[in-house]
Image (cartoon, rainbow, N blue to C red):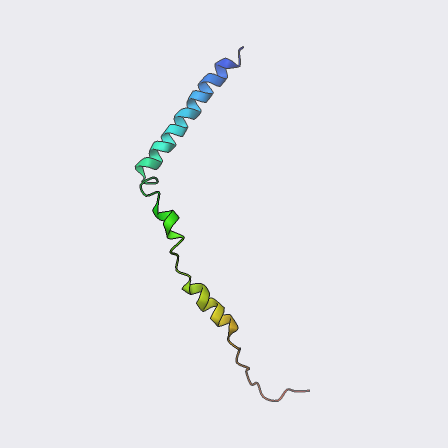
Length: 70
């Protein structure tokens, strides 16, 4: 029964910390726009992926170093 004297203040402290973090996030604007990130992934621009693929498909130019020494 003595443990309850430790657990009750500990739980109240943890709830207080959680509330402070929640209000800090609300004040910082974390919950201002909940829909744009979900829509943003649908309209993501993939041109950089296409350009990267094209660069990999191009044949590499051979460099001429002259006759090899044997």
